[in-house]
Length: 427
Image: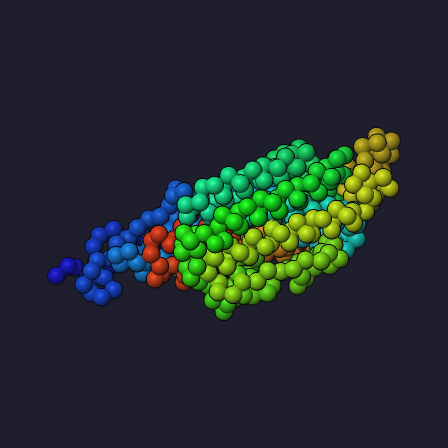
């Protein structure tokens, strides 16, 4: 008779860690053997440095624990020693597939603390929405391409990355950087749209829709893809709510909740779009939800471009920053000619924005779900505490409940459908 040697799951005060013995043990029926397998933290299908410790009874998973923290950088603690604007580049490194959207979510949280989030110039609001929806399409394109490649559809990856490269070109044209954009500032954006940029984005809308139609022809009725995703990784509606899921993972389980609709910010209340909702809550539904979300993002982009105050070239000189020298850096021309503007610049650069004491939370609908920032201020130019609600971190928490009962080959499908980024999960 084999000695009973089971996997030991240990929790420490600092973070959840798992000590696994890879020896033989009694199976679920008392006859077979249990095996401990480490998937990651360098496995290509974990989409980053995620370690999954799974207990196997033959080919079936009996227990699973995600082990996080391999990419921890201490962003929240770093924020306590930086002015509010200095922390903007750190938000690029959260969900690094959608840096433009991260910038906007963080800026809106600080602007809520300052009490100026409702007084942003209209053109600034529309530019931010355009950036957020481009970021959503970009993130979903990568998630979809990687998901499809994980289950064997290499061609889809090539199609989605071709379109995503165009969005990187737009980001470089707009911000000067392709990846870490740092475009948003507290109280506005760093600069207006460059000449010809908006018309190229409008053309891109037609091109990406054609690509999405091609991807749908390749996947939606593909027998292999459907077999690998339908009725796999089912997250029931109540489980999705209980585990705090947000974004496409929540909507894929049949919950009609989108922050842009439930608590509109910027100019979303003036734009028409639908919120796609799934039924079964499986990998296939999450795929369909993201496909439709990209189409709705194109719909939002077209409306935002058509209603852009000042038009594509801003002929009426609409502002893109708040006209408050104590919040936004004054123009260089005034700094060199006005003592008051020079003082404002000096104070902002050396001490930061003088935020009032208080506590605020702001959540934005990012590609992975609700990205939230809780800020505790005791006054002055730096936050006393800053907490990031990372949707990727929260979404990964459902894995111990979803993975058991599935085959090892299903793990890559489930991970791909959840679509997480470890830079955001670990922070």
